[in-house]
Image (cartoon, rainbow, N blue to C red; front, top):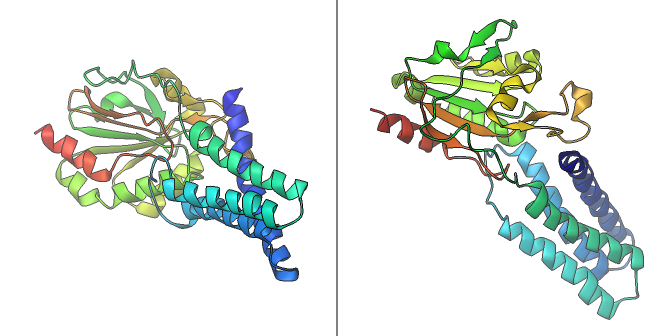
Length: 283
């Protein structure tokens, strides 16, 4: 149930911030200056900038604690409640909005963004990656054993809807020549519909394997399954409610795991240079 609540929260919180942003702007334009509305505007604008930036600016990662954003959210909160409360008349509804914004921000940072207690037993460095089957764009079965004989990078991503995942793939695509020179299998895996993975493959036109984990079968096998892991509302675009936790695995030519990034925060992803360094260390 926790993931379901997270799914609903992440759909509602940005919308609430956008509503407060618009409401505050209209009030400041139409009426007299108000510290209450200025503070709410600052907090809501900060939240809106973060989420808009994730979709509009290609970035594969953000700082874990988003300290600069937090400063402005808190500053807006204090401006609205403290200055507004001292100088202006009481505004119960407006004060409630400010409180919801700052509490929502804390919940986003400390609860929504983190993956608690990830299962690391299967994908431990030194273990051999279990054998599994995936599907290509034409739903042909692809056995993971076919990737033995070369170093392999397995990137499990949540889907085309995830801006951080798309930015991460863009970074890796930028390293295509370096990966090709090292003879690396690059396998990108998502539980999304085959057509979406096919579109992504056609976009980059690289010798990467864009494969589908139908019904999250492999994600469940490897302990990286995320039930109700996508924001509420994306189902109308054809995505299933369940997805995979962002995960990167690197194996040697024998399928032994030499690197596993099981991030505990969906906004924190490994730097692309890390992959090349690990591959080079294999010799």
